[in-house]
Length: 399
Image 1 (cartoon, rainbow, N blue to C red):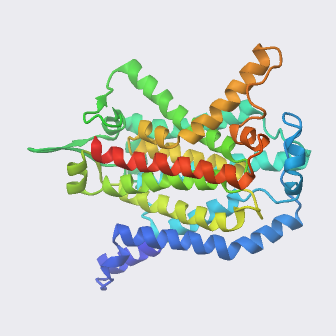
Image 2: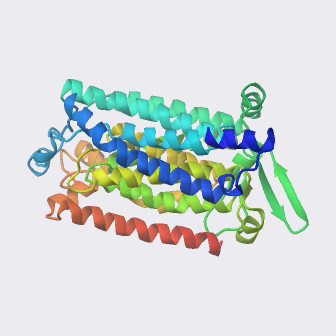
C-alpha cells in the first residue's frame, strides 16, 4: 500500500520521493522490521486472548504415551500462533510489496489458504480434545489443490495470461543470459527449466508426459514441505528456527536472481520479479524472529498447524519459483529426515508386528527420550541447519 502510494506520487504527481523507498534492499529491511515489530507488539495481546478462549496445546498421548510426562507442562500453552505469523507477513506485504507481482499474489494466496487449513485442524484438535484434528487424507487433498493452482499458473500459459489480462497480475519474467545477449522465456518455459546444484546447464522439459510429471512435482514440493515442517513443529523454537535458516538461503537467491550482472556472473536464471519475492521472504523472516521471541524455550505460544503448514508451503513454493527445488531440498534436509522418520516408524509398526525403529517419531522426540534436554535437541538441529544453509550458499558460487 505504501509502496503503491509512493509510486503514484512519484510517477503521476511527479513528487520527489527518496529512492530508498523503491530500492529492493531497503524494502527488504522495511518488510522485515515491520513484521518483526508487529509480532513483538501484538504478541502479548494475542497470547492473552488465546489463553482466554482456552486453545491450549494438545500433547500426543495415544501414539507416544511417554511424551505425556515430558510435555505435561505444555498442555495449557496456547497454540494457533501461526495466525500471528501470517498476520505479520500480510501487514508487511501490504505496506511494502508490489501487489501486482504474480510471485507475491501466489505467495500470499498459498500462505493464507494453508493457514486457514491449519487453523481448521488446530480448532478441531482443541474442540475434540484430541491429537487427530482433520484426517490426513483431507489435509493432503487441500494441500494438493493449492499446489495445483501454483502448477497451473506456471505451466499452463492460458492461466497466467488470463490473470494478467483480467486482474493485472504481472507474471514472472525470466531471461537466460548468454555472451551474445539474452533470451526471454515465457512463464511455462521458465517453469520447465530444472536446475541441479553444481551443474551449470539446466534440464529443459518440453514434452507432454514430462510436463505432467513436472506438474505433479510442483504439487509434491508444496505438499511435502508443508507436511514436513508440520512434523518438525514439536519442540520449542524447532520449526521456526529451521525454517528461518532455510530463508537465509532463499532470500539471497531471490535477491541475486533479480540483478542482471550478478545473475550472469553466478550463472543464475535471471528473474525480474524475484526481487518482490525476496521482500516477501524478508517479511516472513522478520515475523519468525518476532515469533521466536515468544516461542523460545520455555514457549509462551506454539505456532500449530496454522503456522507450520503455510511456512512449509512458502518454502516449497519459493523453491519452485526460483527454480531451486533440489538445492532447497538439500538445505531443508532436516525436514526430510523428520518426515522420513515418521514414514519409517509407521511402516515398521505395520509390517513388523508392532516393532518400532525409533523410541518415538518424529526423530526429535527420539533424541529427547534418549535423554537429550529439549533445548539441546533444538540447538543441535539449528547447528545442522546452519551448516546446510552455508553449503547451500556455497553451491551457488561453485555451480
